[in-house]
Length: 336
Length: 265
Image (cartoon, rainbow over all chains, first blue to last red; front, side, top):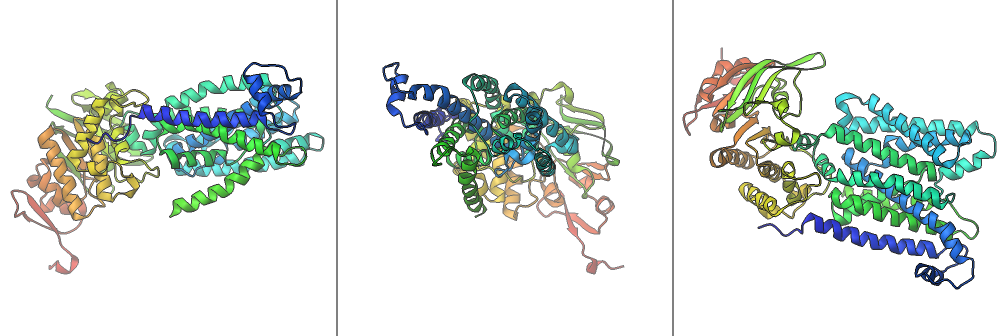
């Protein structure tokens, strides 16, 4: 018999457990390190319920670092998941979550929200979501009917929409002449600094059900990437699943974009890296992307906080500086 | 209940371009049925309609005596399996994983496999001779091997009807015969109805029970190969000169293309 491969459920649990450990390690580091000092002991004490030290560090850990670490984990998870889903839908392992222009659209929506003086949550989140849904509808109209499912038409219209959105962003930036400009630019580069614990928990509660839905659809994604005709004759409603995945992913992407701007390459690098290690099965990759993407983003954000001598840099800078060379390396590898 | 597929007055067009013009025929259960015809005659469209991938503009289609729209997607997938033309899969699935996907119509949403699924796919891989490739990645295989992997996947779907779209198109001679022999065994040993689109009239004549010759979206003729593959019919359909004689292997025709330089008037 050929039953050498362990059952899928065991593999899902084993990989998820391993990635969970990574995430916890990253979170521990993220909570204990920062510009206010390194506090492994304080973190350990407050985790184990002991209070006695009267330094400021526990307060900093729980009021400033904790929301930030959770936000980083959520952002990393959604971006990686978005990348994974787009790669499956476009049947191209090198596709990028931003490729459809959905993040560009939500960025336009978010900037309009910021210019109108809305609050980050829910104001800017909603305007970002409106922007991403508008681009999604635009893309679906451009590549309407049967051709929705053709990967090239989806890709091409995405490139067009993305170029258009970039132009709109630059346009909006050039007509802005006040203090909001610095704010927008910092946000555009990917910034995780402005959040409170309540917002982060609300965000987590919003995103979590969608993670579950995507995991529920993960086997359909497996069938989808082996060919759409084959998927259809295996009993999959590909049109419904494609649209569901597109809407959910644009929702996830706009939720994170409105909080932390455009953070690039996470959605490209993490799914690709995990696929190299664990294989192409989406039932394994969906939980692995959620946990591993979160760990990666916490780590990048930690570097962004710790590396600069003064202040901090946007974490989007770190993800791009690690991600872009890694991507070029992967691209060269896959071409061979 | 002796018909596997019954097609009645099917009409389909892409935009303003009619592809199928009122096609009717039926396929007997347990038969090896091959659809031939020149490029653009509507073969592939017809195949896509029978497999449920495409909905026809007009007409009726019964599968095992029931209209196709009465089946759910999943129950349809338990009756009809489809083997597409060789597709490029850019994701590094192993042969084992691809064949296991054939079980998905019998599984839940997440496709978690049970012991019996493994038995089915083991048999299917043995049947098509790919069990030694189980751990190999799909993109490391030759065209013929890949074709047999997708046939194994179709078999593990436990279908009553298998549809194949030009399965021998880009294969070398050895693999062509191997695929056709497999289909013959599938029909004989498992009683599966095999419906195939083919470009190779000679291979078709050697294996099929019934042949459907299409031209410009209409049925030109239908019947056993001896009746369909006359030189008049082939010359009419393909608009080229051919020589038809008896195949030395048995009681079926052999078609030879006649190059221009041998045509004497």
